[in-house]
Image 1 (cartoon, one colour):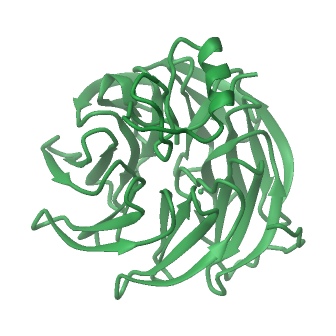
Image 2: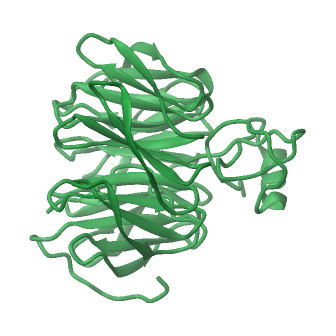
Image 3: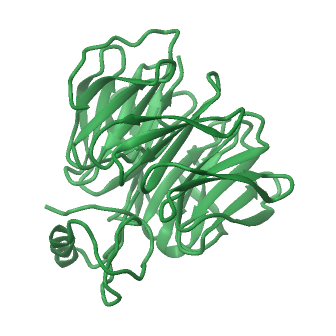
Length: 358
């Protein structure tokens, strides 16, 4: 069985947690990848990928929002009520859960499980796993179409993107894409899918009707996380290896590059599209960028190895999954101050848009 850790970059370091498992994975796959949070010897070449202890049965209220946080080391998903900032449920899923996509109308959460090579389908009304979609690859990033009819999954090992019917819960189309596809984002009009390809340093722009590549946008080195603004006019590619974020105007394809912290991972736009929040895995912080001035507003210290990030615009809170400290940091978006920290599960990751809006 393959072992899957972090999609990131080749880094210089001295030690890596779970090194024996990673070395086993290196023997079974030519492409070796490292975990951003890991420390490895200079001679090692490891690639990596990409959000409690008790089970509480809690029905999801239509008046509340919930964060679905993948815990890669525990094979679980922690469900957080974003009003109370309490974990209300813990759901057991497949092996090494990484990516998340939520569908508010369908009342579903989709979880990519890298080691079991499948996707868990969660009914968010009662937080139970109701189906499992086999992928036969390494599903990482997930994204749901605006009409919630199609789930897209990036298969890291097989360099492809899958289009999965949410009704039939099976793959209906697939497309060979760039090298090591990771993050996904879909335009609000449902016409365009964007995919970061880590090893080819580009973003593939795909026509969702034909599932064909329209063009590619060269970005920084080793792009991983990707996010669209609410209007779909701004696209942010988070480039792990060169510590930058590429801000792309989707109407003109104009690109602006902004420096952030050390080994950035994921990002999220504010509702007014003026601010971008970026997780920096190797300095345990979130960079808050002003889009217009291209300057850093502030840097917020969070937990260890922050990765996934999503914003609850209704409650004005940003949620950051911390892989290294097994918790979630909550930031007040009005003040950019850390509000609280929520204990979740081992190796919290939450790669993707994980706030269920109801």
